Length: 367
Ligand SMILES: *Cc1c(COP(=O)(O)O)cnc(C)c1O
Image (cartoon, rainbow, N blue to C red; front, side, top):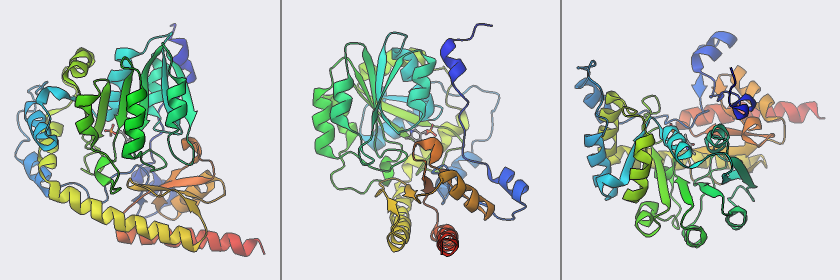
């Protein structure tokens, strides 16, 4: 077989460890997973009710147009139904966009470190990847603009950025969008949009009418608590959506996922509640970091990147053996940090207690 040369350089995605495998390996009874930015409060009860009523007709293909979900999302966001594209997770939309625009000889611009799938998909398509280092956890938008040339097809912008949690304010974003050439697609990935509390955060959905080369990505995997069902969506000018549609697999969002997502978006009270709880949870981590002089980025997401100034894999291992799965910063581009998803108050207290213990052991052994 002659595989595409570029895929030989890739390894499969390394997901956060599953709780079952860790339980077995370390003989632990209880495992708390704070590794994949999932919602510790699950999902809206209305989702569960909607699913119970719809587990029938499994032999029928899903609605390829996601009509009901489309209407519900359009209503919530106040956009037209033809401004939306749905994916099997927003990962799927990232793949559709990459397949639609990237070929060998083209290039794509993104920050680093950022969400891994932009680069991964670009490599598969054989495009050149131009990675612009973050500055203080923030996108260096000026350098990203400077990296754009006539062969640039896509610029990826992640706000709040995974894994730093840093967001892009209104002025910077507008200033950036005004300068990106019209024939370059800007992908604005807002997987954590619903968690944002910053006051100068712009409602990017309104911008897709002004900037015809902008697509906003959102997901049901994070605050909506539906990661297992895989639903994400893109919002853009109808011309962008109709260009992407032929590249989408016809039945990429399954029936149960459509039913669940539709019920989820209608329950904004659940979203608001989770957002408030997440803020309180972040405060627990900020306090811990301040008490122990640890560097961290103030986060607008449901996770926090903490620099322990020691090997991230070791911190990860230490916490895992004590029942807490976090994400090592090493594969994320921050070798001495870990990324922790904000859990419930109790879960946060639990992992913070283990972190304190770890720091004390280290402090004592240094004497
Ligand atoms: C989690 C995440 C996604 C993927 O979300 P899915 O909808 O589950 O595929 C996309 N972008 C960022 C930045 C994420 O953190």
